[in-house]
Length: 270
Image 1 (cartoon, rainbow, N blue to C red):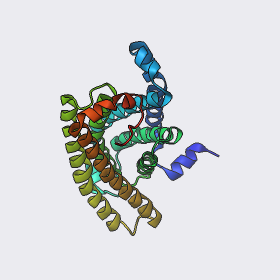
Image 2 (cartoon, one colour):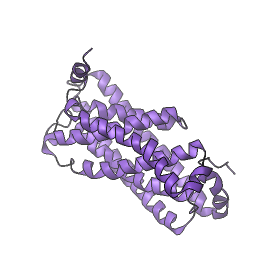
Image 3 (tube, rainbow, N blue to C red):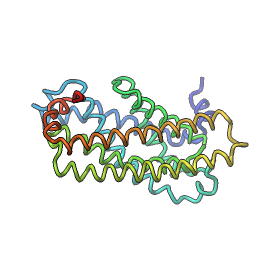
Image 4 (cartoon, rainbow, N blue to C red):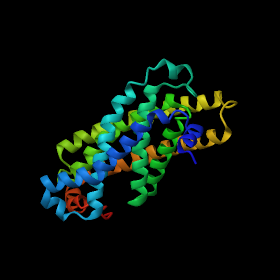
């Protein structure tokens, strides 16, 4: 079987972006499996030695997530005003958008594999697989107009990773965490829920307008993926607010749980 022929038949716009896709996938794996352990053993040997495998993996995946957020947001912003995509929001295409989608697809492939291999929560698996499918499918091309817009959701991930790191470095309940928490909730609500909700409304309008050209199975799968991701956003917002309230309403309780958090374990409910 000719692999390139299969790719061309299923995802016709992907082949020119395969080098970026493969390089990005390799980069996230190198950061996860090589760079983080190497730097941790070099600069933080006592702390790294005390961590179990789960805690070490949590540090690695949060650093990969932060790298992705820092890289993908500027790339996505550059694609928001592209006339080629705006002219046809269902099937429009430009190679600049393809680069963004290749990086995002590689990241969510890495993320899906990690979420399955190092399973912690089914929601993480659903999120990774849904995002992977949506961004890969945009290489047909299909809905690349919305790919970069949905990637702006990663703006809240930047603050989420900082919040997580502060927990793990004995700064739970600190002023820095409070300020970061305000930015986290504000960014999450504005980018993922308000802007994301508006984008989803436009998304379903595009599906409805192009329903005679779009295969029904594609409408069902992509539409379900969008609803799933928006549902996870609302679910995670509730957990986020509850977490912040617990930290700052009961600082003594939170501080007493730092050792468990630092080791990557979920503290027991009080």
